[in-house]
Image (cartoon, rainbow, N blue to C red; front, top):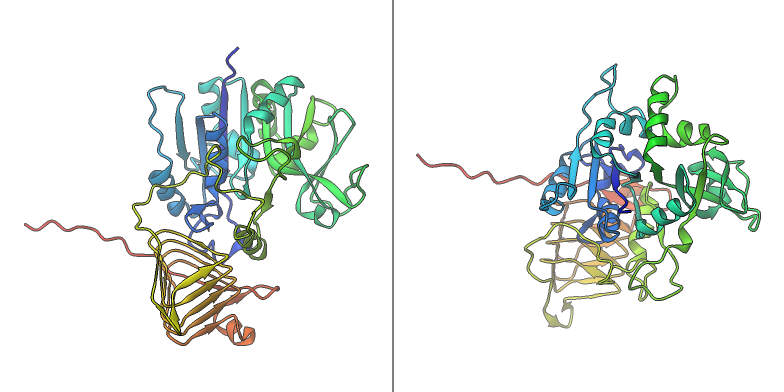
Length: 416
């Protein structure tokens, strides 16, 4: 039997803990890795897994995300079941509300499920950095004859309050669900860790529709983690899928599985720094599992001048297209598209978004520069945190975040 799979990507969250990077954009639209956006990871996972029927549910500050989806993810196949379609919040609830929770987001678009009539529905978040062969999770779901399957991964028990924590029996059945509970039980074989939900679910369609219609009548937060999943304990066959068993084609056998919740500025920064390792756990260079994004018509990155005191170079860094290192130095950093590093400038352990300009002899250390930031000649960022706090956002660990500004769009005028 050809299994019909419908995908939903939940991309409507505010991402308040990533402010100011989310001041003008939704969290899934935040740049990552020089030329990508966070949403590219989940969409690439779907496409690489052979799942081509995908709705992207958007809500807050969605313009940047919509533009990225249009530039990089428009799918117009010959078959009607090949599509990636962004779906704005349509206020289909009786109260005409915005999405009140993750389950409500699906409920307000339940007509899309009924029209497609899939066998299973894959509901995934758009705010994590990872690679996953979703087809293997669906195969596990079918093999177990599950009503719902939850992707899960061990995390340190100190992080239990940030996740939904699963209790399972030896067969993998979920027997209890603890939503963001610091006292959640640890794994029987490892008292230092808990089994955390990744926020990715595969539902059998009949069960999903039944539970969503029932949830409408309840006075709750209409959320999968808080309401739907705990309410299914003992009423449905619910299994945990061990993400650590997932295999990505093209990766060496036994490669560790990389998954990061980049919900905070520090976590986002650390995940960005992970990329520049000699052998990073997150492999962006696997041609059998490409990370897809918008197709940019960029010139290659360029490094110019080779004089004492004026040498353009970068080491242990990622440099995206159209960037020019013009007599400056870059170490242990990630640079986006169209960045300019001028003579004598020094950038170290930093994440620089598109179209930033670091002036002559300026110094930037342990910082995140949003798009279009202009660092004046001779300026220093990340060297005096007390001074930086007067002008910028500084995290508890000392990462300086410099707010950018929206680029202008050139609109051609018609001469008459």
